[in-house]
Structures are given as C-alpha cells and as structure tokens.
Amino acid sequence: MPGPFSQAVIAVVWDFDKTLIAGNMQSPLFERYGVDERAFWSEVDALREFYLAHGARRVADDALYLNHILEYVRAGRFRGLSNAILHDLGADLTFHPGMPEFLGTLRAAIENDATFQRADITLEHYVVSTGLRPMIEGSAVRPFVDDVWACEFIEAHHPPGFDRPEQRQLFPSHEITALAYQIDNTSKTRALFEINKGTNKRPEIHVNSALPRELRRVPFEHMIYIADGPSDVPAWSVVRANGGMAFGVYQRGSLAQFEQISTLQRDGRIHAFAEADYLPDSTAFLWLTTEVRRIADKIVEDREVQLRRAVRSAPR
Image 1 (tube, one colour):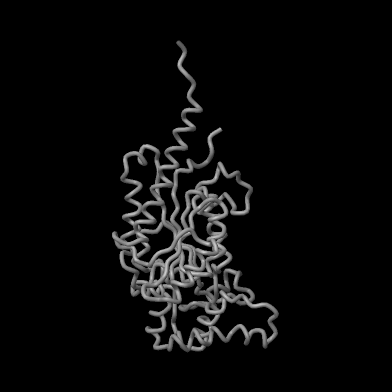
Image 2: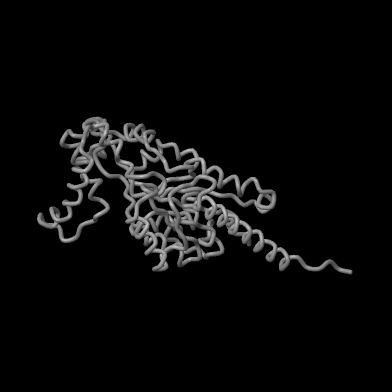
C-alpha cells in the first residue's frame, strides 16, 4: 500500500536572528518608537529575578521579552503597535551577504537538475525562530520560504463574556493585546517534527500521532538545520540524532561567537560551521550546496535500489 508522501523533499530549516540577519530583528521596532534598545534588553534580563521575587517559582525565560513588549504597549511606549506595523518593520531588516538570494540559488541547484527532476526531488526552506512572525513575514526573505514558525500576537481583548456574539463588538483593539503563539528554544523541536511528519501540509496529521518513519513526509536524514548558538542545541540534537545535518554560523569578526560555535563543533553538537556569509565563494555557500546535493543523490540511489528490488526479471 503506497504511503501518503513520496519522501522526496529536502528541508533546509533556518534560525533567523544572527543566522540570516546580523542582530536582533526587534531593532527597527525600538527605532520607530524612540526606545533605548539596550535599556529594553537590560530590563528583560532583570525580569527573571523580578518574577521570582514576586511569587513565581519557575520562569519561562524565552517568554520574558514578549511579555515586556506587551507591557510597553500597555504603558504607551509602543502605543498603537499592531501586527501590521510589525509586518512593515520587517522590510527594514538587513540580511547577511548573499541572503536572501542564496535560498533561491540553493533550491534551483536541486530542482533544475535533470536527474533530481526525474526523481521528483524538491527543496523547501523553513524559518523556525523565537522572534516575531509578522516581521519575518514582512521581510525580504519571505518569498523564498515555504513556512514560518515564530511568535505571534493577537489584537483583541478577551474579558469574561467575550465569546458571546453580542459582546464581541464591545472589545475592539487596534494594537496587540496578548500572545497568541510562542516558539521557544525547546518548542523549536516540535516545529521540526511537524515538518518531519508533514503536519504543516496535512493538518489532519497531529504532531503527536504515531507515524512510522517510512511514512513521514520529510525524513530527518533529508533535513539540515542552520543556526548560530547554544540556544539551538535542542533543535540541533533532534536533527543529528535522527540522521540529519546540523550547521552553525558565526558573525564576521566576532572572536566570542567563533569560539562559541567552535566549541559546539568540538562537543559534537554540529557537523560543521562557517561565517554567516552566503555569497557564492563562501564556505557556507559551498558546504550547504554540497550537502543538499549529497542528500538528493542519496534519494536517487535509494530509489534505484528500491526499483531493482521491486522489478522481477521478464520471463524467457
């Protein structure tokens, strides 16, 4: 009985901040509202102790900056901040050299190859980020990306009684009011399993549903995860443990980031690393191009083996 997927998809999964862009994507937000970026992040760093001092026993660190953005909205510092504004701010993001054009080049290297075409092999790009989805959606990278997992806000109040139709019109909002969806460094692994099982393409397949490996849409062996630092260790570990490739990048001229990513390689967290430069003569360009072609060649080879096993000799 044929499976639901052909398993001919290669998935290249990207972190965003410091992987595709040089810094944090929120910088244009602070510039728009005249907020001191360093002061904001300093406050975020102090929130853990603040929460613990005010009754919390455990603190979700990855949610701190999101809650603080909402506090700035409530305080009027980010007055009127909406998903539409965040989307527009995405256009101000500056990408590393070679991006986002490299995403199209990498896809074309597979999909324009006659051998890979005969095997129906395709390449998909995904972004999995603890940043803000509207900004990613509004950035120059979006036309090259098949889907995005990132944090999202809603623009609606929801006090008691909000679900009664006659009440909904009483709670309008033209700015973000609450967190709707959050990706943290651990839940990035859930996104990887959604790609692996095909949940993003077939919503009827729940990410926690039992699905044999041979029936999953994108085997982990067909996946590459690219990121910049220790916060991505859970995602790298899942990909590596299941036969995929883990690749790290560091910022040009940053000794601290070079030492950090070099240590991750020595510890076996990643297979290789390079400077976050995706121009045609760069190490990242060459390594990623070589690896996606290697994966594609392996798919072709496996298909040929399966065909030889399936086809019986003609009668004589």
